Length: 357
Image 1: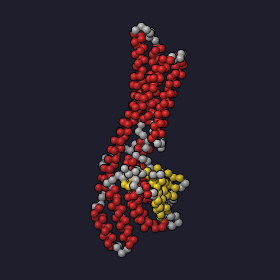
Image 2 (image 1 turned 45 degrees about the horizontal axis):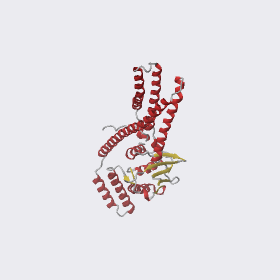
Image 3 (image 1 turned 60 degrees about the vertical axis):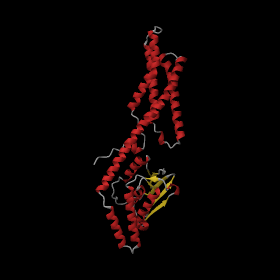
Image 4 (image 1 turned 180 degrees about the vertical axis):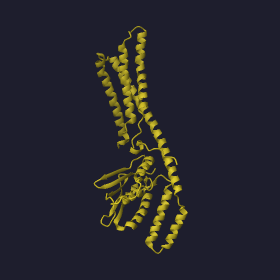
């Protein structure tokens, strides 16, 4: 079986993929040369026509301008490609206002610096004609740079999308292969559960237990064909799981569910809630003296699962990969991050929801 594509830091931490510095530097070098050409051609023609003598002062002047044009190009491209403004939870108009403001500030800073340092380097002030030329060039260059930077950002994002799609395809193929290797004939299992139901038909609790187990298995099989389910479907599955857990732990375990009706149609990866509740049950003490309450509730468009931390005296069996896999599924499917926190003895997991389109 092929190994899956590696999950890079970009996907792990939900940051943007950086545009390579080599690509930014090459673009900045080229643009610096291009915007310096008019001045170079003017000086060359003046020297050839005998109106001006060649001097290393002109070479120094050219290099001075070129370094500023290069530095300005690099700074603007870097600002508009590799600064992750999306990590700030700002409305889109506010975000774009901040981007434009920062671009203007960089432009003004370079305009001021190129005029202030010129006398230090050459012992004279830059004349008004040169100032106007430099300002005009920088303003036009800033507009060109902004669109070049957005093109580079779009190109990198498209590459990320292709990589994510390949990762998701590979992961689905591996999941299907693993399911095939460990598959029990569903018809055999359902027929066995139906037979068990007929045997315990007089025992209402046992019948209900088997029916819940049958529903859970059917839900697991059906959810393997889809990447997202509605919260309403997931809660119905969680209620069946809670019934099985309550049958085992009785009043030592309480699963409190409080979900706002308006988010029931939102979607999330299947089995996400059951995994978190199972994680709480597996890693915390559940006894008559220390009963466990797991809360599942909605808040600000998210589902939150929390429980008090009461470590078991013996370590529960498990691979420790459940939460890691859930985080990867959220990044690949929803492009969002699962937030895990431990505060004041409470273990809390926040699951984002996506509105049903």
